[in-house]
Image (cartoon, rainbow, N blue to C red; front, side, top):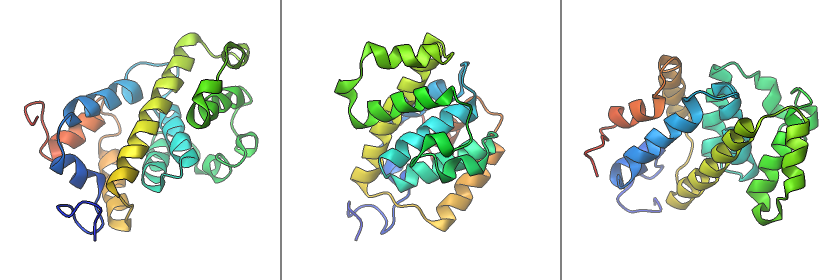
Length: 191
């Protein structure tokens, strides 16, 4: 039985969003803004942060989805093999290690973040804007992981295949998340 009796046995995120559409359109627009608007971080790098955050939270649906999207946007699949366990062995540039350490601490112990943690990120060559973009993606995926897990969303092979096809088709779109909302029948008027 699904966590919510009105949802399918193995609900996809689309099932949840269609059933409980309150706030979904602004949420999709927010995802477009933080994951596709201009940034020092590429779309693939922001998706990597989304996947990393989701991996830290053991949210297999979001981790798998955003890992796949990051790969579609040019992130080497090999990076993910050791990323959550040991980012230093993931094959990323050295400057990524302080940024990922910040994201990890923000996910696991946010009240323990200090100015010194930010200074290490800046010393590695990241700008304030890049750190903020990493923070906002991390924060959004901590929230999304809780929505997904709270609603009992589960990854399925069919769901992953459909998601891959959709994200490959929307690869150049500046609004893939609101495109998805529109595709499943959610619009700004849906609320």
